[in-house]
Image (tube, rainbow, N blue to C red; front, side, top):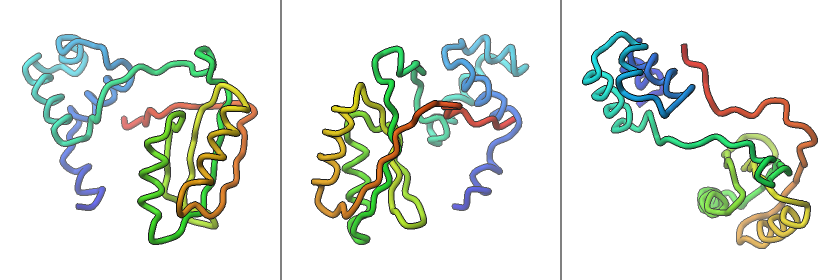
Length: 156
């Protein structure tokens, strides 16, 4: 199924619900229904349908990682042996500190975003990473300043 086909099944009401939940996923069905202009039952059914389709994958709390001691962000580019790429990506995705794992094009195969408490934790992470089977090379950049960090996509 193409991405455009997936999007065709979402109507204006679904998009409004998603947009509202991205701003505050703690809102009651009653409040969501009121904001969208639909009944509470319809809001409930729409949200459950979005969850079942995997469009809404979960609910979480967004924290300021620096305020809880994780003020070092690293961007790590990885070259892996081609036929083991997915295996390496899945192993990295299980690691503590990893925020995102991306399968990318270019000179590197994988981009990883990870958060650490200090340089020593980053150093140990990189040493563990390069000891993984099928990891050929890594290049790490340390983030000096976070200008924007937000995984909310504005859909309306």
